[in-house]
Length: 66
Image 1 (cartoon, rainbow, N blue to C red):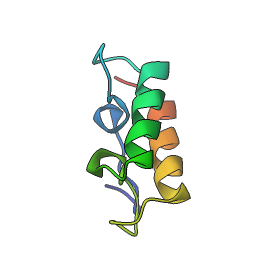
Image 2: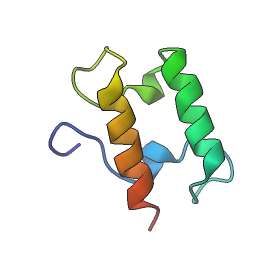
Image 3: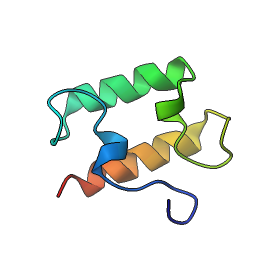
């Protein structure tokens, strides 16, 4: 976690095929966010599911996988 946000491919890589990022990862994140599931709680304040979590996911997704 850096600057309040989690970084790295693993954070955004939520759906098969693992090791690459695609729309299925976005869909899985949105489903987790709407269900208040822990894998969607990526940013402070932890325990609150909000736009900060979306920004953190999009940042990790944009960073891609090594």
